[in-house]
Amino acid sequence: EPEVTQTPSHQVTQMGQEVILRCVPISNHLYFYWYRQILGQKVEFLVSFYNNEISEKSEIFDDQFSVERPDGSNFTLKIRSTKLEDSAMYFCASRTGVEQYFGPGTRLTVT
Amino acid sequence: GDSVTQMEGPVTLSEEAFLTINCTYTATGYPSLFWYVQYPGEGLQLLLKATKADDKGSNKGFEATYRKETTSFHLEKGSVQVSDSAVYFCALRTRNRDDKIIFGKGTRLHILP
Image (tube, rainbow over the protein chains, first blue to last red):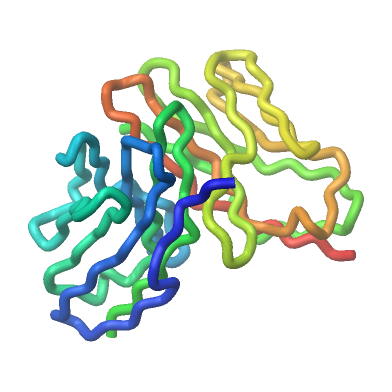
């Protein structure tokens, strides 16, 4: 069964560094999403992406964040200058129909 | 704004016990409601869904009924197994143009053999 994959599973970085989280959505899907979950808190929507542009973004998704679909398979989330409060689990999701399919997540730890 | 509230965990039960995880929501209009499950080391999987009032979603012995009058979508299972140990997330998606999913905080379920 096709699935969404994410790499790396765990990323440790220092405050102020740039990180890129990678996702490979299911191949025929057209809509892509990033969510995050700070430890002990709820899963929060960050951004949705369709037709090579952002459809919607939350107030969390400020100028430090960007997304890109650099080729036909990858979907990336970049954080330009990480802060301690960016430490979280980041989930990628994709869909073509109604249901969103989620990846296993990348745990980002900012020290 | 739209939100989901679910019972705090962790919930610890013995195998074959009855499970209820409470979930209530606040939303404008008539959202679709979901339960997602996350097994250790894995991603979020859709467990069941309901798209309109009085619909019952069911899967793997789990059930939840969309109750508009009480704005609730409680998850139930008659006899839990050790393999049901996971984190369960209640969630909604509104019928607006945007289709983001709004999640509850999650409830960790631990089943003892």
